[in-house]
Image 1 (cartoon, rainbow, N blue to C red):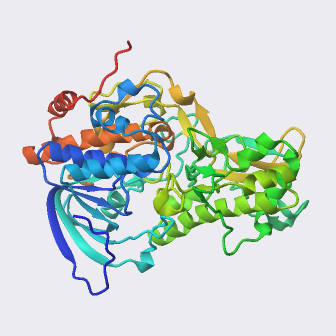
Image 2: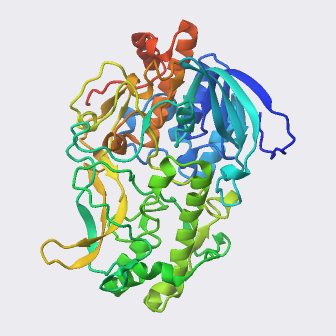
Image 3: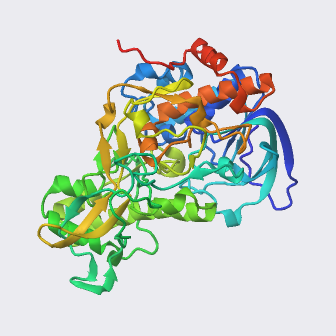
Length: 526
């Protein structure tokens, strides 16, 4: 069932029922729905936008963050890895795949509230969530309730963990201290990208206030916890081809004064064109542009994601739009400001978004890259000890492998401790181990996608899984989410057949079925 037509205030609330309800049409959500269907359950898949495939339909390639593809088995390897690398084609492939199985999909609806009886969810109440022409989600203030979905088991496969949160299942946000889980690299980190540019509106005058794009330093020591989380951005494509080019216009409230920090940074860089390209378009990743972590300023705002992770849809809609307007504004500034070298102004002005890649949204990716938001506080918490291969859980349901990959969380004024010179720096950025991490895959236990029994007995969370900020930073890759979602869906159907809470299923039986389906739950080096 597709429900893409906007509802009216007079619409009657409709109730629909299935064995398994999957929330979020991310790659993980699509795999979870398909798996539950293959395992013999009736399924409803809910997607707040009108597009399936999440970040794999929005710039990230299916195999891109899987350094050893052999660790991803099951549907991830057999199906999703075969969808190709063109984002629009990947999105179409997800739609066709789900449609071919006859799975009921409710588009343009998101969870509004959750009904519970004891430790179990009985239903989710949905509200309208139609995105605008650039895929910005509908603000909460403009949505209306119109659908109720009843199910026996629920899987939250969204990037935000809204079903989990509205079910009042405990979760974490922000950065833990290094003492909380014994992670020496956790919490506030040493600064990076220090640059000798003055952070104050009036240079040298702290009473004049900080420039836009600079956060006040909270002053917490290295290793302390705080509420920041790593920067989000779009994985976008640009082109100069008139047949594909969608013009990047400045935001309505554009003023060059908002980009004074950029101006000072540009003056510092001088005629270094490669460094200027680090600001815009950024880092050319795999055809699409990504955040250039080695640049003080780049194609995404820093410090605002902390308000998205646990915000409502009024907050998130505004912040999603802010990411768009920031990119539009920095493009316009670099295309027009006289302090920018003339050659680079002309180069930047020639770029538009590539609407051939994202034709439905004028070249804007339909999904903001929400690298991390809420994280389940489950039975088991994945930490740096897991990432570093120092644990050996017996209930593995899939493997992960990547370095601890954290993009900057904030940009602050900072004095060089040796010279005392004032400048601006980023903080939080690290990429420990690179793409290969330790080189040895590590297992993710079933308990990491499972709430505590007293918190909820019929919910599984394969995307916003239970992990520290550091543990999640290495685990948060789409192939891992997909693998965990397939395993979670098998567990969901098993709990139905065993008439028990998801915490009480026979894990050995689960693992046996996963291996039958081609999942890889243990690694033997070849």
